[in-house]
Image (tube, rainbow, N blue to C red; front, side, top):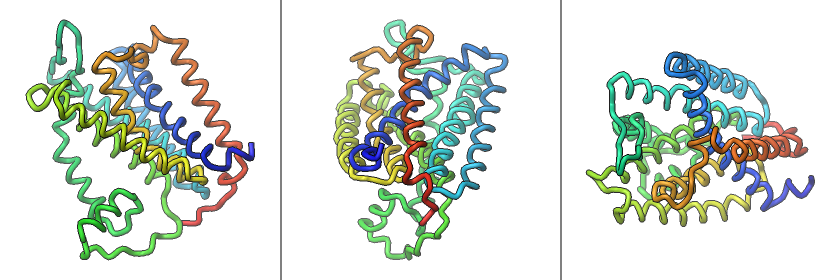
Length: 290
């Protein structure tokens, strides 16, 4: 167990934990629609988002960085699925938006057709992070340096950082951003599934995620590794999504009842990794050190 506190194991465990949230999240959304039906699914989604808020509050009260990060991870996933994704589902149905059909098959659901309409709001939110002098995000700090934004005076980060809200907001923002990127390149009126832009996004994401993964496996602090794994995994997931779009493999998470055994195995490994992380001695007992 002591070896799990060292590199590259910490980074690999963090990567796998975040990676498995992606198919599980997709499957959970589809199962909610099947279990609760059109009549009750939005009530269930609202409750799921509320659970996310509760997890966020609990996480903000925790005094360890690891606990705050884990609570934030699940809070972000519950909030995104319950309040964001299902809000698009609701208005897609409310406005009777038809799905995108090619060769007799649904290639893009109605909710994802209207999601890109939020791109303006996304850009405004990104400006907040770009101009935030207290941000600890490596990407935005890199932009601030290289764009010569001298009007931003960086200050020393506060000692007690709210890791739960940081993690929750991180996963929701990155999911939102790359959802829009993928949906824009998929759009035949802009680019299309087999446009060079889609290939650039696919293989560019692969190279970018490999670069981030190499840096990730050098991290020995689990909480930081989880937060670093979030962009690493989501950027890598662009490759998975596009390859699935190109029919390179079967996306079993969009048919969880048909592939119940496979999805159960993914869930079991995910729970095992969480338990391994929880029972690691270091990090769990460490107080937040800023």
